[in-house]
Length: 201
Image (cartoon, rainbow, N blue to C red; front, side, top):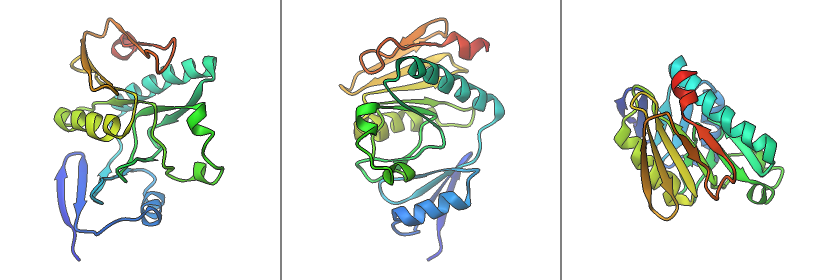
C-alpha cells in the first residue's frame, strides 16, 4: 500500500502504513538515529528532523537545569529528547526533557529499560521551535502528556517569552515574561527553573 504523506515543516506524518508494532518501530528508529520519531495512538508515524541549533541550545539549557536539580536530590531519573516512552494510549512519545521518579523507574526490569518502555513520565518539558505549530504543541501537552497521566508539563515558547504550565488536575497557567522562575511544585520538590537563562544564555 502506498503511503499518503502530509508534511507541515518540519514534521512529516505518514498515513496508510498500517499498524506499526513495537518491533517495527524500534527498527525504524535504529535505522534513522538522526531523526525524532513518534507513533500516534492511531498508528500513524510522525517524523521530526533535527532542530535548528538555537532551539537545540534552549533544549540543552532546559535539560541542564532539570539534571542539576536531580543530581542534587537523587529523586528520580532525567531523560533527554532521544528517549521514547510508550504511553497508555499506545503512542510512543518523546519530550525535550523529562523526569521519572525512582519509584516508577525501579519497577522496570533491566530488559524493559532497553526498550521504549511502557512508562509515563511524571514531568516533561517541551520547547517550541520557530517552525512548530503552537496549537499542535498545546494539543500534545493536554492529550498526549497530561491525558496519559503526566503530573506536570511545561511548554516553553522562548521567542514569545511565554511558559504554559499544565497540571494533572486539568488546570493551565500561562506565565508571561522570562524574568521569572517556574516551580516544580509538589512533583519536583525544591526545583526552580530560571526562565531568564533561556532568554539571556
